Length: 341
Picture (tube, one colour):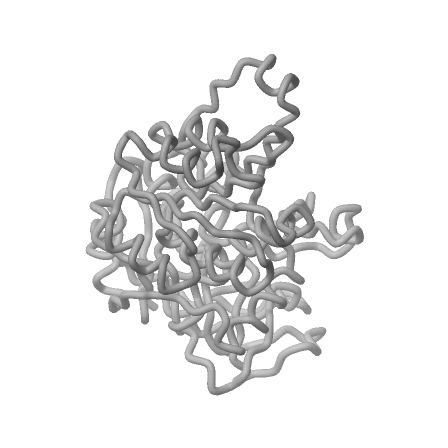
């Protein structure tokens, strides 16, 4: 089969011919990939940023946002059948550790991460597990929902955690209205009554944010912190969801958070430099976010299939994977890029 494989860090991947995966264990599921999301994390992987954490096994297949159709199942699989349309939780988990039993399966101590720790879904077929499969309406096109498997679940997970803080009368700032942020805005609009302020440097992204439910938009132009403060009466936002968290956004985000407010870090790449006195004296919270649970993904798909969360996508054939990655790196993708084998 064709697959997009990374052979060396700081190099572009190439299209290789490799053997198709097969179901070996009783709970294995092989999926015929119908859509594979292209994520900024893929760019970070190519730079070697995840190697220390994941021991990235070069050469290997990229792709951690995947949806498609069940192609083969192991002898113990009962929740899906060959031919079912599925979206895949990005981390196949064990179901037995404390984190899994507590419902925090994204912290499973025995999980794998296709696309980071082993072969992913930028290929014609992907090996996963029964526990990762969320069954979809058969009319669903995998290419339309694939990016919800990581970008979507990550945005939803952060919003879901913040819901108790976002009662009527509160304000939430969203930094970045791109691939994750445009999903987060829709989740906020669907699940809360908070006032939504979106900050981005791209005018087109801000126009999209307005269409998706933003009450106010602020251009990131060096004066955006003042702009947010003006909109919040000088107090800052109750919650800031930072989908960028690099190139200075991570420090702006904390500054835009009001006293006793919460700054949610979802994007990554930067370094938060905050005097501890500023944290304790204002009782501001810093909350980390990574992926989400299986139930988060299942809930998100209910919203998606009800039309309350939609992806803005640009599709590429699998052979054009390098172009898709280049377009993402150069800021030429609004929403999400999707590879379609």
